[in-house]
Length: 269
Length: 152
Ligand SMILES: Cc1cc2nc3c(=O)[nH]c(=O)nc-3n(C[C@@H](O)[C@@H](O)[C@H](O)COP(=O)(O)OP(=O)(O)OC[C@H]3O[C@@H](n4cnc5c(N)ncnc54)[C@H](O)[C@@H]3O)c2cc1C
Ligand code: FES
Ligand code: FES
Image (cartoon, rainbow over all chains, first blue to last red; front, top):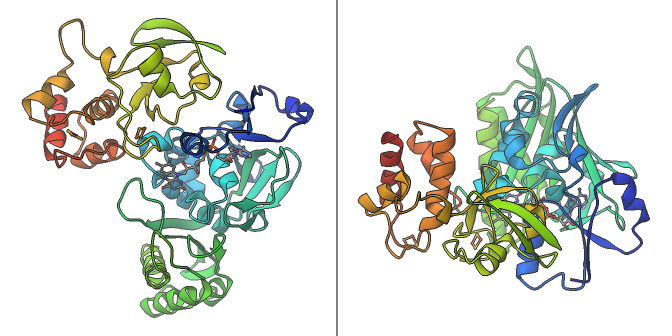
């Protein structure tokens, strides 16, 4: 470790000259440290920034502070009501121990295509706010573990439009707990009088970043959710993703599973 | 850096390297070796401790963030010579074999039972889902938690 800094006010960040690695809950950072990585990094502990912890209604949005843990998100009445898929995703992260520590800001900043909060944030059309700017979630990720974050740019909060959508998340892992997604999916639907007026579908772990399935969304718009429509939508979605073979799964299995979990999600609505 | 916190009811103050893990402070500085190190990656739960009422993996917990917290390790459960009812239930049900996972399992059960008087089977499975056991096959552990819940 080269240096360790603790910040207790956002304003103090601007005065830091050297490039830092931010430390929030440490569930990614300490795995790396325990592996011997980050030996010459300057760690900057942001956990004292208490204003970044918590879920609030803010005008037409829900604000989720970057330091909010998945345990808090999973049990939040506001999130369950307006962003059900995010509550479901939060509940699927790791284990109770991990959820008590892992923050949403860390999950987004880490930028893994299998980060479980991310497909949910895609379909909820979230805005990632940093200490410098706001970026639409879809523009935030540039590749596996790569984001638009610049040197010492800190995610402060995530804004989610407060809308009456029904939304849901599902993931497939090697087992129920402590399993990184082989494939995950989130869907948000606006349904008026039985007709879908807007549909947003996204998959995790089947591409370099989370992937939004625009064609599937367009196909669903204006339709009623019937068995045939669901089957066709799942087929279109499986064609829109680009999974690969890796240590966790094969591309073929991922493509098949993607269709299956989208079918299950849509059937539940 | 110097940090102070409460552990098993006692106030302590220790010098720590800024990036130190809570696990190493507990085991090496404070000599509380009931907390085990299995995987060092958050996967096994052998290092679980309770911080401010919540279960965490001490192998991933920055010691520097322990400042001002209230921590319970397995050593904090017994009262003098008297073991905690959850520990008793683990023994009675034969839920301990090699024992390496046991401190973490017992603490996971404690957090559950502190929050829920009558946990369902599903609650128990979920509460213990971050703790691996390579010996028992989990059934006896589950039974021990049920038994401890009934005894309260
Ligand atoms: C055993 C285990 C199981 C897991 N299972 C899952 C799972 O099922 N699903 C899943 O999605 N994830 C899983 N994870 C990963 C998940 O815990 C992390 O991605 C977590 O959300 C990161 O948050 P943190 O607060 O712990 O971040 P940290 O480890 O503190 O930081 C993570 C990264 O984000 C940066 N960072 C943190 N906060 C900010 C900020 N506000 N602004 C800018 N950069 C920031 C850090 O510099 C670092 O690069 C698992 C991890 C472990 C160890
Ligand atoms: S040693 Fe900490 S979870 Fe395995
Ligand atoms: S008793 Fe041996 S690992 Fe659980």
